[in-house]
Image (tube, rainbow, N blue to C red; front, side, top):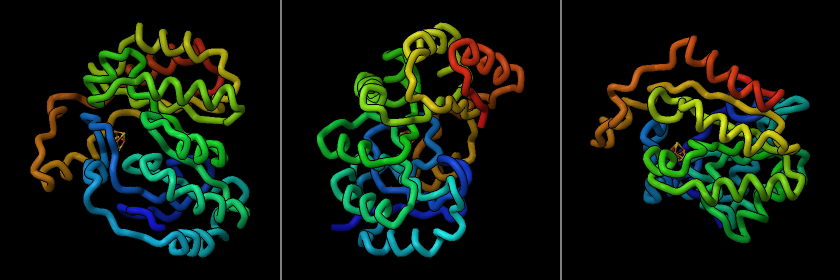
Length: 242
Ligand code: SF4
């Protein structure tokens, strides 16, 4: 079985610990208004890629991974291809390669459970804690994402909680405080990453013929980031702005 791959990034330092090969998979059930990779959303497209090809690439790059690096499966939404990912992740791990799954947590089934059970680390994006605002941002409810977090906690699976801070969309103090209250006692959260909103993927919308709906949304000011960080710091000891 193969995977639908959108693209690769070698020597990535942004998606998980250390230096990593990032494999962006095609297809995502969310429709985030700020998605930086809108060309990965459609389940059509991508390149059918044999499992051996991914393992071969990873082994080629293994000398650069060092002690902490490895492979991150991102997207798109990698759990949409959980069934095909499982044997690849097993192969990578049997070769001593660390594996992260970068997920929105919005898909749950026995394959996803198997996949997250195998991963060394999950990077769990929580787009908003408030369900209504989550739906406005992504088009989907956040119930499954919150349950995924709970599963990781209950099963002793370490994860990073990632939060994209978008002015006017996900920077509400009451929502961040509610998130903090909900997660503050989770022992499996190794890091909370605040990701500033950026518009680097904006040009891709034009190419796709899609309207970029956040054209009037400003970038975060340093003060906004500092204020959000201070709120998160009130609940977690492992906050960083990435
Ligand atoms: S979950 Fe990620 S890939 Fe999917 S639409 Fe949102 S930002 Fe894009």
